Image 1 (cartoon, rainbow, N blue to C red):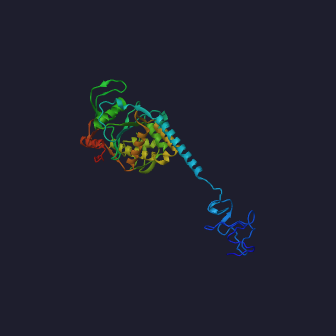
Image 2: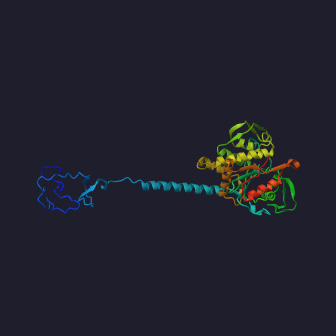
Image 3: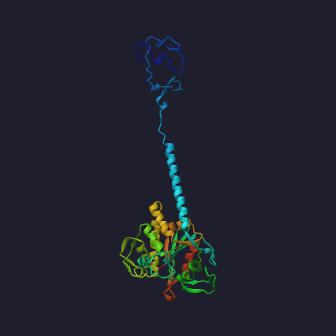
Length: 404
């Protein structure tokens, strides 16, 4: 016990008030208002009031009679929680508003011009979703100088320059090119605009179907010759294709050999390089140099490029960057023609599936060919085609291969 002058002790505070102790009876207070003064027992020790970490103040409870521990002391605290939550909620609201606004803006630009409900004698639907993707030689919206720069020529109307079936399902995506020189049957049909019925069956090249009655007859012809029901249709012209490529900053391709073709304007050296819109269009249209069997070689180039384009478009660098996203969507949606039931969700699913094909998570092939047919056309291998389409219908892993 500390000895201090005046007899202060551990049982009294410095003002003469007895200190409460656990288990001890209250002591009469001295000093002001009820006691002999500051001292109770001569020679008692002095209690400074600081020995156990207490401070002056109006603390209550715990038997401390006017004192409180430091951690109970009422100090102002910095409260960041509510402000942080407000900032996070605000950011989430802004992002959601931007996403919703972008969705409706893009949805309003989709050109839903193809009515698949008028297609006659349709096969039963199978598992998964089938897209018919068409590249046309439409010069719509191109100036005379652009036609010259892109080597498109000035032919009137539009024809199919490339055709592919993209199957999306649990067995993984499968991209099958349909050479435009394929020898097929065009079945009887009713004109989509004229309403006139044509009873005769034609044996001719596949691209003749589109030339006669556009998308509806092309879909009917593909369904008739494959037995697959086409769920959605997407078509893009020359101008839109080139603009999309430029909007994403070009597409990197590894060109296996030198290519030079005056008809398409292709002029490439072997190796990796980034193609702009003009170069990309000449690459996918080239059928006279570096493509092997002309139309078949060209379809392989088209598959490679479209898959690479989808792979680059569906990246965070494009989707999350407004300065790249809006020009890309604007360039594509202005010239992209789809069926009336196509939604942005369907369109996104199509692009993601093509991205998977590019990354090796799907199958990429030509329609199996058995040989040549009249007028230099290509004859499908009927046995393999039947096996392939049955696997697609059942949403099974594709085991059929194409030798060309």
